[in-house]
Length: 189
Image (cartoon, rainbow, N blue to C red; front, top):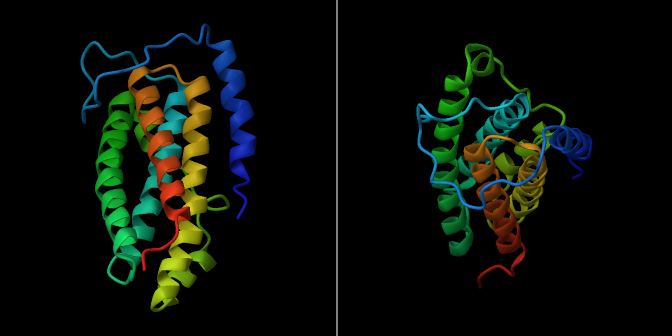
């Protein structure tokens, strides 16, 4: 399924990144904490937009994996889903804390995921799938969903300004891309 918002967002993020100044940023940032340090700079509007979009995306990812985790037949896929659940729950807490600390308006807005997230039909397919079909449908739905997250994170790397958020975007891009590769691997027999 094509994610219509990624092609629209990438130029916006890239053009804003060009206007923000030099692209030289630290290659490695310290691990994020649930609350920013006092010395942390305020995130830019694009950083806040990225966080807001990723919060909505991550909430939907968690809905997907929790919907199927007890019905998967492939042991490796169950392990991957458990890892996604744990990792993205931690990332979600971090992103929510950063948004809350950014400013009152940043934490008060909510990104509506309708139109570019997983559709109601795809969620219904996940709910009604049985047996090995659960694994197949999850692979289809989650692969597209995580690919969209990697694309969004990659776009933010070119435009974001806050080092903590850029570090998170880099980790999101790497982990979601790896998940897509793992889900493309042949199922365990």
